[in-house]
Image (tube, rainbow, N blue to C red; front, side):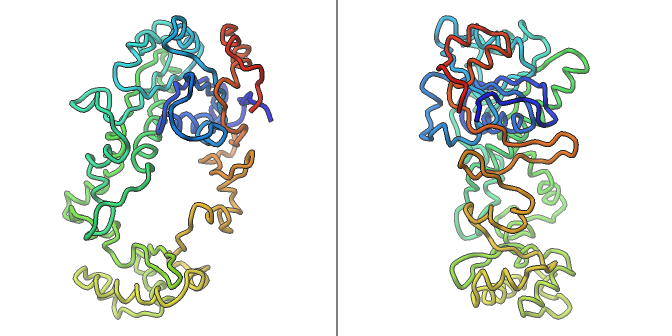
Length: 384
């Protein structure tokens, strides 16, 4: 297997991206661009980003190449600016003002490359009272109101890993912004700065809920609504073996199928349409699910339109027949991981290389990007 990320697969073939190494949403956004075919060069710092993970297993660095640059060295900023001059996109995730102090902020980069799309990924954004403060996913989503929506009504909010804030509200919005700005740059010759903040993206994700709240169709508290676990036919239930089933039987015809297979009844759908009776219905549904194992209920609902599915673990998910048939997960270099998404009919994507080890791509990047000085830092191999 080679390090050279063999750009050429995916709709972003020919797009060059410089990623200034960081943690969380920035690397994931750059991985998504790399999955889509962009030639992503990650600029790693000496000693790595500081997370206790073996770089060989950091899947967010797949399909990339890496060079190591010490930004505090006299020639460090100049090396990054040389990369930016040859790139279409640059992604950084520093606190506001740090890139400028290092001499690699938007003004310096645009002086070298006016067409550059400069993507900035932060939690709080580039301005506002909290812009300079440290933070992590859970604090960002807490202030947006979205964390407060998740979890049981009689307990604390449930932390959704870092999927809602870092990756959905952060990475995906950064990628949308970068691609929109790239379209503009190619049409006009003018680059721009994309300010992607986790707080902004996460708040934006709740647009439908805010509409429902304004219309009186959503209560501003946990576990009292159609989609937050308050509804007895949209939620999760424990089974006899300590596992769980997920139920999403919202529409009437799906609800009727759900009750029939579960062995319950609700004459004329009285409990379905009366929130005052939801507690009673939930107890009946819960008792039925507790009476049998997850495997039993999976078999009962298999092939139906009741909108019921087993809650699988990370280790179980790749083996589900549907996901296996679609190739939703893939094995590469001994690591089971999600395959690139979405899918394209004319420009298919793939996991081309494993995680880029720090500095392992310096030689190839030096040759292909015309930057011989980078080769001086090459570790002597382009393999990963």
